[in-house]
Image (tube, rainbow, N blue to C red):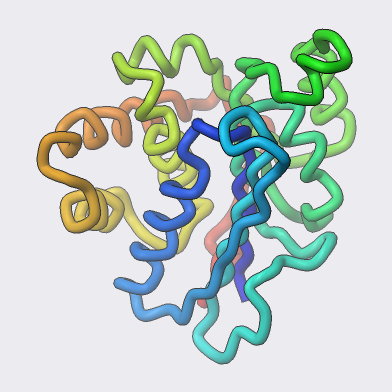
Amino acid sequence: MFNCLLTGVGGQGTVLLSRLIGAAAIAKGYNVRGTETIGMAQRGGSVVSHVRMNNGEIYSPLIPPEGADVLLAFEPAEAVRALPFLKDSGEIITLNRAVRPVSSALKGDYDASALIDFLREKVERLTVVDGEDLIRRCGNAKTVNVALLGAAVARELLPFTMDEAERTLRERLPEKYLEMNLHALHAGADTISADTISADITSEDLPC
């Protein structure tokens, strides 16, 4: 069983990204199940998507605590919130760009850099992507979800290649949005370099 958890706030494209990952995995022949848990606000509330893939039966769409192989986070506070789901051997890719969720708006601001420092203390395999730089590379903040997909594929954290990810985008996205998202996919991949990676992952960590 391979488990991928995605987390962000409403409006960041978390659900679409989970659908794209699931579709690419199905195209590779995996059985896939997934679901979402959505917070109190459609836009601005916490959103968590579960994607599970296997060659055999999958009895629940929900990833259990300490069950996620990969955590993809659009926002550092949501990465910290979802940390109990990560395996000891799991890896996180997170953007460092803070987006104030509803809870922050109600209780005051928070320090995104402190949350990143906390993740670095707690997680052995952590890749932090500069969110502002990623938006500049993409040219459109609405495609950052696909850029995060590109980063995960470049890190070899998902069981499909960049070409297979591209094929999924071509099959699943409306034509008028396709080129900007293909650009974002490669922009995300380009952010992955020796200086952004804090630990390596091997093909043995992927589903067989």
